Amino acid sequence: MGSNIEALTTLFTEFYYWVTVVFMFLIHVGFCLYEVAASRRRNHLHTLMKNTMCIPLVTITFFFFGWWIYFAFPNGPFITGGIDFEAATGARAFDPAMGTNLQDHINGVFWAAFLLFSWTAASIVSGSVIERIRSGAFWILAVTIGSLAWIIDAAWGWHSAGWMVKLLGYHDAYASGVIHAIAGGFALGILIVLGPRLGKFAADGTPRDIPPHNTWLATLGLFLIYTGFWGFYAACNIPIISPEGIGGEITGATWTATNIYLAPTTLSAITFNFLMSLSGGLLMGYVVSKGDAFWTYSAGLAGIIAASAGNDLYHPIQAMFIGAIGAFAAYRLHYFVERRFKIDDAVGAVAVHGYAGFIGVVIAGFMLWGQPSSPYAGYAAINPLGNFIGAIIMFGLLGFLPGFVVAKILHGFGMLRIPAKVELEGLDFQASQAYEAAIRDVQGAETSLVSSKT
Amino acid sequence: MSSNGMTSWAVDLADVGAVYPFQGTEFILYIAGLVFWIWWHVAQIRAESREVRYEIGADTTGEATRRAIAAY
Image 1 (cartoon, each protein chain N blue to C red):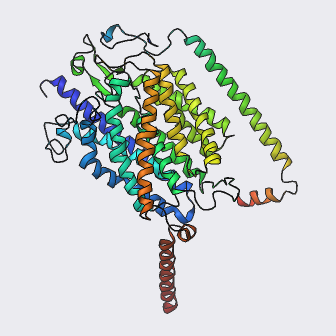
Image 2 (cartoon, each protein chain N blue to C red):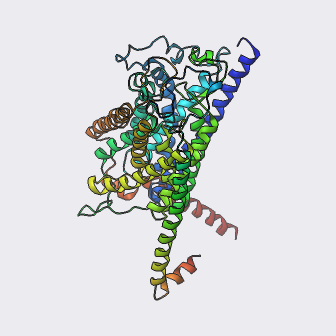
Image 3 (cartoon, rainbow over the protein chains, first blue to last red):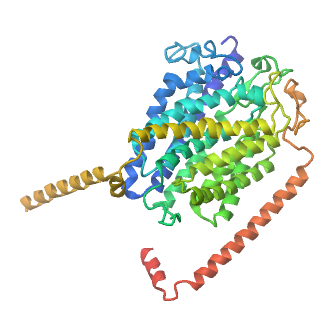
């Protein structure tokens, strides 16, 4: 850090990302709450631990290789170049930059911001497969999306040098596709192999509603996800950068915040659009679901997700309408897919994240048509075809396909789904039995003490 | 052609103002937003009226109501 202004900029950036990480922690808290709320009482502990253990597993694997992938794979590889070993040097788990190092204030907090996105990707999948997946299988799938699939898509479509940005003009500033569509597609791939919960469908194929055991807890969880989403949005920005910091591509002397592609935006803009898209989603969700609390809250999330691809650039009223469209589509598509294809998505994650995210990326291609995707010269402009192809890559190629293949492999080894008897007993059966035995034991002991003293 | 008029970010940001797409349609957007807001109230009130009508017609014996009161 040469000058005081440079030092202040670096320390501000360091603190900025650190704060976003703390906010984003609430996303995982929220997912845990609403997953447990959606599960039945005999599956609570299993449901909670399944999502909780994503944290350490995705964290260590993201440290070991996930972060390196982001910097090494923007070229594909072999689409616009090879593996970029040089750019990824400081992201190797054994590099001095990946530790306490007074020459680097940003690597740790930037790594953590991306890591929290990784948890989110895994956590989105977690809710859809509750009450019948084996934890061991889920944790392998969580690492697959959290430390592998999503970070490849980030390198491709969410990096200032990503090949999708260069060649397709792909624009997805707040990760409609990069996080949400991929996680929704991944969940769908697993669900097809995993199958529905016992009792979900009647003999004639009519779906039954399996309501959340605690709607209050579900909505509280979704409220916390909204809160964490603020941190997510802030973390998608570079908070302050000079024109020189963008290679002098932007002329003049005005410093700016940028999106992940280093194109200018403002925190003010995304604050407008976050709230207006949330509102569009909530309003539409309330009407279309007839006031159902779980779906109204989920629709708020779908609203934000649908507008996220272009929320760095939309007008707030545009963001509101796109949010409403995303919420409407997510709700309708969830029940259509459930009826037509007998997919049991316990929390509607495929719809809220996958379909709304996919639609959001496609809409951004039209809305932002012709705008520069990057401050760097030679990049394709944002366009509908590029974003449509990008949405297919996110949802299908890097989401659905790996989810389906890994689930098939796990299924082939008999590791994917718990036996029917255990599903009916409840995943917490052993723990519940031990709990009740412990209660009986201590009650007996205390009662005998009372008898001996009287 | 660009939906916000920008075709390159190689500009001095001191000279750039609004960058949202389809500038010039703000008032139309505003009117559309107002219509959406009013539509929401109409749709919500209709749906709530249907729900109230159903609830008035339900539980003719009062048994479910007594259970609801007991459950607090």
